[in-house]
Amino acid sequence: MGLIEGRFEPNIIVTSTDAIFNWARSRSIWPLTFGLACCAIEMMATNASRFDLDRFGIFPRPTPRQSDCLLISGTVTAKMGERLVTLYEQMSEPRYVISMGSCANSGGPYCDHGYHVIKGVDQILPVDVYIPGCPPRPEALIDGFLKLRDLIMKETIAKPSA
Amino acid sequence: MTIPEIFNILQEKFPEAELVLEENNPDPIIRAKCEAIADISLLLRDDPDFSFDSLMCLSGVETVEEFQTVYHLYSMLHNHKVTLRAGGTKEEELIVPTVSHIWPTADWHERESFDLFGIKYTDHPDPRRILLPDDWVGYPLRKDYEPQKTWHKIPLTAIDYKEEDNGDES
Image (cartoon, rainbow over all chains, first blue to last red; front, side, top):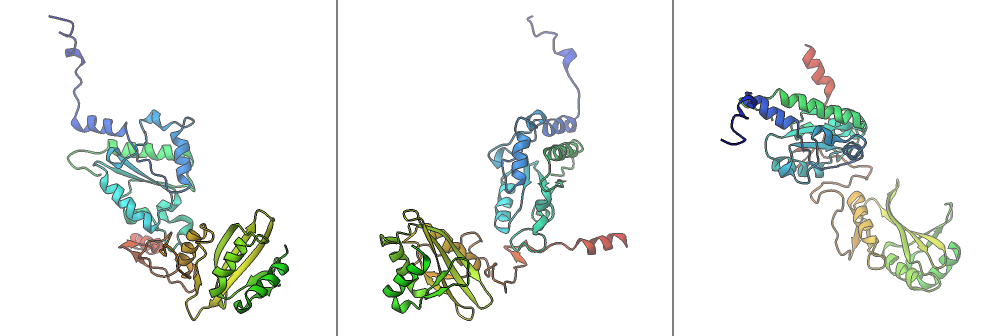
């Protein structure tokens, strides 16, 4: 009866919805192209050919509607914090937040005297992964993405965390 | 043209501007009454002997006694420089006429010095804050500035992790 007959039966893979969803999500984390400060330079370097985030399926998207992950790469000022929340709300679920560098984690050098800096972006957004460093090296950023990947693999659709 | 020469010519042309040559600086600074700044600037740009065609920098300054606006001028034609200064005591608002119609670059400089020092510029085309949000309270580079604790419900104070850690241990 044709070429297709009998060819698919031995190839069907049985899996759980969780496993296939998590596999798909964790292997194509698309962060939003969003640079705030000097950490953005490291983010760009990590996306470029030498460190090549694309080999993990991580590819920056120009709009929050197509993004899965908000990479906060730099100092979050009060004025930008408000816009950051808007961007986060525009992303479709499931969505993840990576806080990159000391400024986004805790205010960093602006912690004591920065009147305009939010002391830790976790005060306005739910952060999944923190990457220390000032700025973090590209290897650290890759490690952060791998941590996020592990986090996504543990998810279940019965109880979504993001 | 040296700064004392410029100062002498300016003093002839603007006898009412209370011009003072402050010579205790590496480069002497010409101090003028606030109200006269725009007229002096126009002359400094348009007179062919001066032709200060470039405003290198416009700064807001707070000293112990007063607020000041400082203008660094440069002439690309004659390769000479001059510094102007206008100031007023801290008790009252410093109000300076704008020079943004003379050097368009002054537009954003004046907005920044208004934003951070609260120095007001009369006849400015767009007298808004430039860096901070429009509804920000206070002028952050002033010595007596009190930082806001929150802005639009966004917390701006640091979390005291020491207290939180102690709570976990007990």
